[in-house]
Length: 111
Length: 117
Image 1 (cartoon, each protein chain N blue to C red):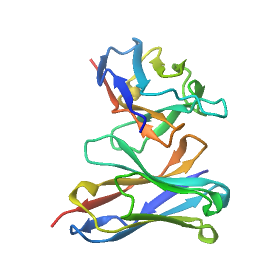
Image 2: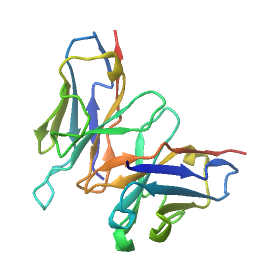
Image 3: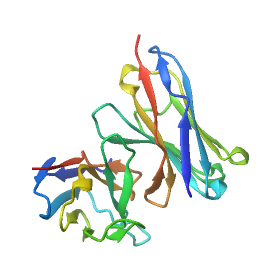
């Protein structure tokens, strides 16, 4: 199984400041079709997960442009350029190249 | 608007069975693969099972293989998860999700399953 490792697991952030979450996979996520199926999800308290980013860096419709994804191979990052109050929640990376596995989650909270 | 609505959760004793349903709307259900996932209380997300369009491909996580069975009824726009031999550790919120080639682009609101005597 592909293991996804996120860091940090807890991220206190000041409103308006940037935030960054790292996600590393135990093996390359480059699929035989050439795509890299690395996704980012946001789960607000009491809600279902919501996809923010797919294939490393593609934002879903309605996702604010303060969210961005980057990376390649086994090393990926989610960045929030300026954290807002509505960004509080748990963020998960997920790989969809070798079945599906998720990172442990990173809890973003306001300082 | 894409909607996925799960039902069928509840309290069940260890060793018991439960059947979860997920009704889809707002898209051509028969054209999409679908998945079940779960989240234990206070824990992360776990993928459980996948069913392809036309039932061509079915797969399970090791944690549920042999105990859970995924199925679909395209005429009813419905996805199912038959869960047998339930264990305490199966207690979780169960989600259905639309499979968008290497990702889950839409999720339901979840249904809670509690396995306890």
